[in-house]
Length: 150
Picture 1 (cartoon, rainbow, N blue to C red):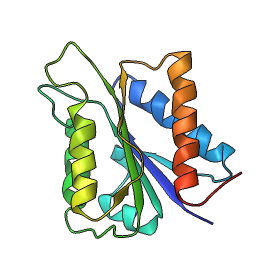
Picture 2: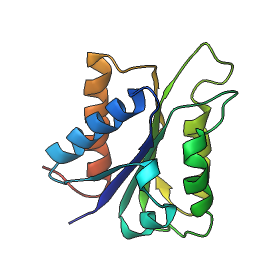
Picture 3: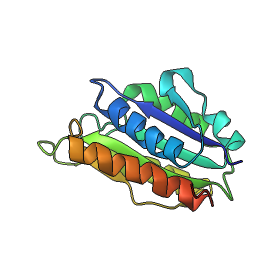
Picture 4: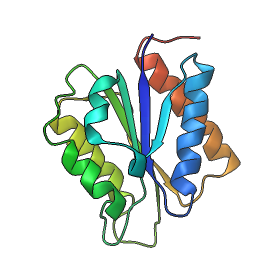
């Protein structure tokens, strides 16, 4: 049985909503994912999973949220070769860089050997009902990338 972890940072609850909808899709595919706030996680944990999903809102001028900084640095010494990955986050089009934290996390996962199986998911602020369904499908597709078909 494949193991999947979802680690996210959420200030207003938007990215958490996205994470939960993705987790629901993974559950529908037959896997119970581990879902953690980045404040309760350690970057080294990722090595214990077959699938890694990271979620963050974009802060300031396209930065990772402050609470994601330590976790991001903890990932430096990891080798996630053979692991599947995807990234998601809430974003705000009123800023110059839309969802840049998603791009930053994708680059870090590629740098440490993880295989990107889905393009980064960026949702404007809080997810609508339709976007939550899209997140559910995102979770199912991620599970399918690990060979899980329910």
